Length: 152
Image 1 (cartoon, rainbow, N blue to C red):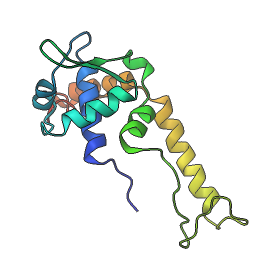
Image 2 (image 1 turned 60 degrees about the vertical axis):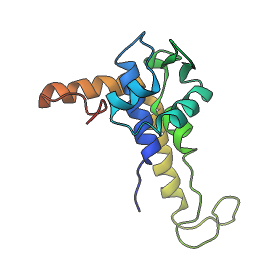
Image 3 (image 1 turned 135 degrees about the horizontal axis):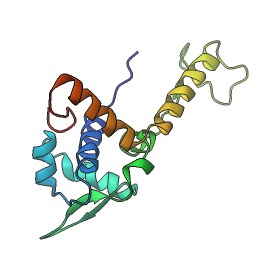
């Protein structure tokens, strides 16, 4: 079993970290793609999703661009990941092909699996975009490298 983000999730977090690190600036899709090392063709889809979810404000045309719709301290990593990847859920039973939900009895692993999922959701909901940016700065400071989220 693997738990990971798709490229959309990874790229979206990179874009948001870059915007959080540049407060008050409106950045175009091209600027974001270059600064964050994200393929230019992916940026419009990602910013559209994040704008629809209320995380970004985007305006088209000359002088347009994207910026955070709210302060980074109010945006949780859970909100970002669910906007880009969908809800975190147990979609199938671990022991066979039936679903555990609404089954009586649930499979023998259901409780442990649910507890693990709930812990992950709790940790992501308690971690903000600001917390993540601060951690990126700490990592960059100790390694002497530029922020990984901004183009590496």
